[in-house]
Amino acid sequence: MSEVVTVEADLSIEMNVHCPNDECGSYIDLLNSSDTDEHDHNDDGYLLSQMFPKNGDNTDFECEDVTCSKCKTRFNVKGLAW
Ligand SMILES: [Zn+2]
Picture 1: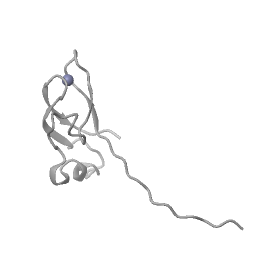
Picture 2: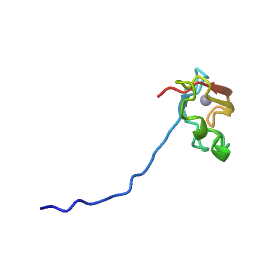
Picture 3: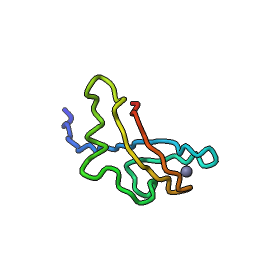
Picture 4: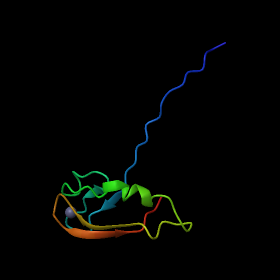
């Protein structure tokens, strides 16, 4: 009889958007400050606390004033698909 082992799981979350600047189009992870011009948008869990739908969808999800590290374009995010 083989013994069943127990392991710990790692949770890995990314919240990805494409930079709206057509000439850039950089793939940006909102949870990675190196993608967002060193700004931590998840301060106090702001983004992760919005992850779970309140009304059956994530249309209220928002992240304001994001800056693309690559081209410095500023934009807002509204809605989260998963
Ligand atoms: Zn960009």
